[in-house]
Length: 598
Image (cartoon, rainbow, N blue to C red; front, side, top):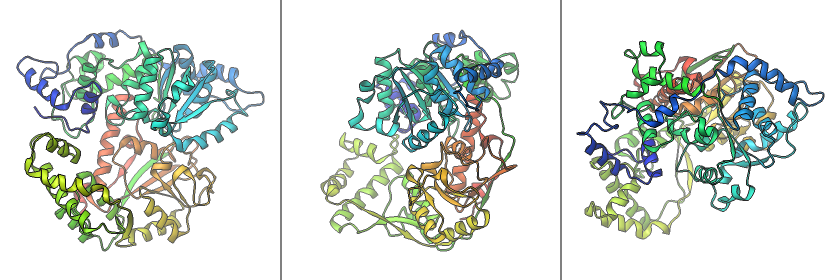
């Protein structure tokens, strides 16, 4: 039985439970003859956790949302305030109050900032903590000042960023604050069980189970149920509609997750019990999607869970692609793909490096070292890189990262590689590389500058160097870290209807940019969750245009493949959570990877 890749969701779950992927592979092999729950032909087995989840109460939050929104508006609105709660906001606040916590899977643009602040009021919190991305703290503070004119907001809310909480010197911050209520905005930032911030939250919730937790996100799931099962447990406690035991979580994830292919997927098995009569009738035709939808219904019907069910917005969404003529990159791409070397001759080891450099070269540049390393450092590195690449290419032990190769050599495997590893270790810390961008062509920069002048839209960039250079030649402001431009002005202050350059990492979530309806995406993300957030910056409530258009730049097959992967993610997210993803209903005419000739 194959060993799970070390970066897979399953491998992360195993490590969290103190097991190795190799241990799990041996257990699988041993179980093949005994009909284990992990044996694919048997599928997911009935368990006490499944019985518990089937017995949970159900309700439709939409049935009383209008009435709740009106009543809570009257109760929480400040004197002279004019804002009204939307139905989903009223339902969320009612559930948070009634069930002492909640999982609010509201779509991007549904108004989660108001929910996050008023949650502390309806819970009468004495030590409120709002957990959110660092880049959104200033924006949330500005929003809070504006909303205070309309709502009876708490006098003080401690805002803590995920990034700060993850740092070693802040490991005990939660214990020092002792929050009685934690609202986690963009709670998908806690999806990785191996991240320091997630471990600290998990430790605090275990030590203080009475703490009320509210998780909110427009994209609670990226590719796996394991992205949010632990968050659901914190938020819903006894009402948690996801399995709480390790073995059940593995089985459900192996049956329902979005994966590259179906090799090793478990059959749904006993999960058919989640289906109603209508779903059972179509199970034979689409077993995976049917059970995913049944799970979604079980999740969204649970008291304490409020998930967007209102489908598409009134304005249309179109995603197309453009492939500008780019000269001067073909030789660099060939050298990268065929020889596994950068244009300057430096070897690469991992596929992730290949992916990163292809995305750079597709835009007309790549990063290199400056100054160049001394030969006594460079040659041992190249020797080790070549040896490591050969082991990764030909091994049958499931190794797929340099760190795993190092561990295997240290354990006595691959003795032929020991001398090259020792040689590299002897000089590794004698030189610290610094990078600079080398431009092969400015064709893409010029294309983007012309597009902004013509369309007056937002040019979304992945690379800081590309954004800086584009800003320099176009004279257009570039908003990056913290959502501010070179002059320190926030992106929300940029004049509507004029072009701007925006970093996806810094501005792809949490920003209200409905003043624009055209975007150019220079490096398409491969994650459906990132796309949902990015599309929601303009395709959201308050958009006045009849149509929102995102244009994806596709110069190489890898860029098209990234978009295709994101679309598959979006389909799984829609089926599993009921949050209809924009990639699932947009009018898409993006070129396919097999049709890109470069």
